[in-house]
Amino acid sequence: MQKTNTTMKKAINLISIFTLIVSLLFAGCSSKENPIDSTVITTTSGDISGSLENGIFAYKGIPYAKADRFMPPQAPDVWDGVRECTEYGPIAMQVSRSTDVNMDEKKSFCVNVWTPGLNDGKERPVMLWIHGGGFASGSSDMDVIFDGASLAQKGDIVVVSVNHRLNILGFLDLSACGEKYAKSGNVGMLDLVESLKWINKNIENFGGDPNNVTIFGESGGGGKVGTLMCMPAAKGLFHKAIIMSGTLINIMNKEKSQAIGLALLDEFGLTKDEVGKLNEIPYGQLVAAGDSACAKTVGIRKVGSGIVFGFDPTVDGVDLLQQPFSPGFSGISSDVPLMIGTTFNELMRNVYGEKDMTFEQARERLIKTYGDKTDEYIELFAQSYPDFSPQDLLSIDTVFRPNTIIAADAAAKGKSAPVYSYLFGWKSPVNNGTRGSFHGLELSFVFSNIDLSESSTGNGQEAYELADIMSSSWLNFAKTGNPNVENKLPAWEPYTPENGTIMFFDNTCSIKNNHDRELMALIKATNRQ
Image 1 (cartoon, helix red, strand yellow):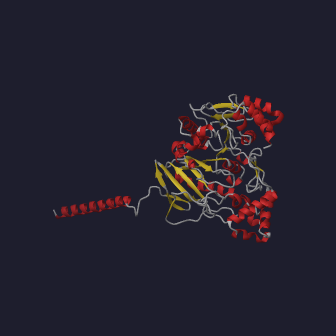
Image 2 (cartoon, helix red, strand yellow):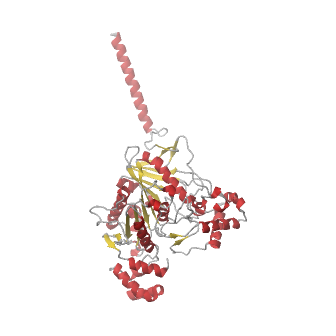
Image 3 (cartoon, helix red, strand yellow):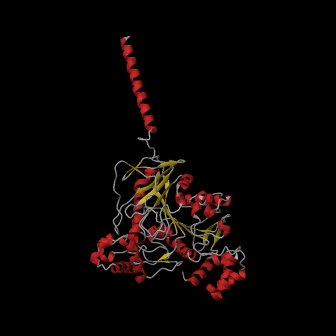
């Protein structure tokens, strides 16, 4: 009996201890001082925590690199403990209109990640969003529609966005001052390469597949995507590319970029041997001197021009083999499927607010640009867009679309992988329909974030339906390299110069074949873009 009682006491004690442990664990789970955080994940630099909302894990402001001024990026410092990553990090230094923007030269090397699952063994496609703003401004959080949660949830993918060095800090070429500065003219793009390396090493823990990465960007972001396609260091780190309204022609070469660098030294009265003193010059003074150096060497870029120069990536034969869109891309990206397109109006100053304009009034204005070719222009326009309005004649994009046809032609000829092309023609109904299909409008649809962009898209059912189609198309391309959406889009075949196939995105999506090639050739010849 004594033995039985002893055994029972031991059992009761074990039960009591187990109950105490369980209660402590549950107490710990509810404790604000010592929570058990289900978002904690390990990266190559240390553990991080994020947030979880509606089934999507979000991590913001994760360091992916560090760098000294004008030097290539390196892996970030490691940290102890758990780093909280629930707020966007600082943005790259730039001339900002707002005084309360958080800019930091040292701490802006950060990525943001949205994912449906962590360490769950899934190999989700990864989409890296590269922001616009040319090579001079912008950030991963410059617009609320860049939030990747909706796209990650809809497609069961991992969305990443990135900040990187811009303008004079990203693209001042000081290579004439010695080997130490050999890479200085392209460090802003090398930052993006470093972010791809971070993805390659870390994204599996976020439920992503490092062997299925799509880079996509709009405007300057599209230009950066094209530039990455010409950079040997980026080869193999991404597998598909989407260029949206990004086909401006960068004419920077080593001669031009070195001339700017030397002129900048002259602005401060420095010799080549004193180049290190630039590290101590405040950013604002550096920018002012840089503007002056550019004006004296390569000139001032005309607003609306299709040509890019100044503090932009430069061809050096090592980090950048050639400029994109001139006319195509480097052969190192020949195996990368490409999707490329534009919007109907882009950055044009449109006249959709002039509701009573007649065709004759439009023609009178066109004569100022097209002269004796005005009637030919109108005839080609009518063939390209049979339902056109007088306002369309004066509002159609004359910069991106002509360059995109040339770039798509060259890509289709020079790539082993398929090329898909599109034209976004949906016009915004807001402001009494006066904004047209403007530059960047399609992003709300691609990110499936119409509810966050009603000031641009309105909140009509048509916008939501088109967003469902376009986001599905972008997701399918990221997953398979094919943007077709069964039962939602007509069959979309790869682009060739012969078929000129584009998907025209509107309330009714349709396929067009070389519908505006002659029109755009006339526009380009006349506008000399």
